[in-house]
Length: 420
Figure: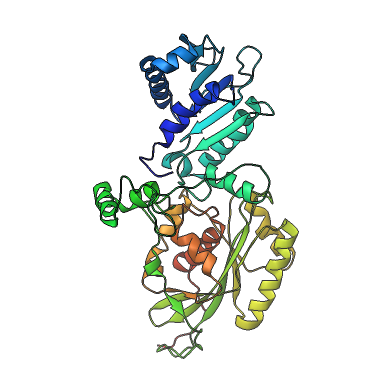
């Protein structure tokens, strides 16, 4: 739900108390926050509500606070013998119990932020924490409630949403932006007119924050690598013409490949992006070809597809080279291709640069029209490079960078003889 809607107050204060007093009759509630500071704040809010509300004091009776062996803060209620524990994600809760009871209500409130979702390792860590520690801590009838914002296409909430859509897990995915898809404001009491909404938007003062926190749209960060207005398209590839040097424009296909580590559901796909390097008077440009591959493949399947593409492009353009990163698990691919008779393989080394930095290096040739895209067949590739860092997968972007960077750093050297 959008910022200011009271979701944390409802879910981490009102709901746990109601779950103990109401018909759910919960005995052991555990609330997770991202940091210990947030956990302490939630505990303070709960304590204040219990101390200041006479009706709650009467129903729940006296309560006491304690710190357990996990370092988490708890409130224990004498009348109901129920307990609410608040902890941060870095506090292990393996084997946690309240007398004979495992947690029967687990609430995760904003356990992710922009920093933790920025890298795949960070996203995997949160996902594995939920699946490996939080869920097993409960019992078969434990209720799990997760509240947060949509920070990334591959965030915890989005992964759970996908699992729900695929019927892997049971549950409900509830989504409440300030303005829904029909343009209706969900809080007309506070924002009765469009003008009131606009005043709030201007008060926020940051479009990314407005889109992400209020409209619940996943948007790239301010350091976006490639902008959509930079993308240039071609209708058809021209016929090579004679240049001023007297030679016909040289062409060469460079095929960027980014093989997946595995075929697991959360692994990247194998991505293959072909581009035609086309000589012009002042250098080279590249036409991205529409025969783009992006799917889960076994290693033998990847080899066969590469061999087929090599034969096809070799026939059409003669000069064809694969471009593959020379790192760890990818080293086997160029070696096997050469064993299979595909000798034109170029390997590259990232040189300590991260993926975003390498994509940024292609920005100038994209913006200046040195790299052109087909009007059909490259939609997913464009989506990944424009929304890099937000898209769930970045495999096509990686393969694209391999192909384009090879043109920038190691352009073709056609064999030519010049007479003086």
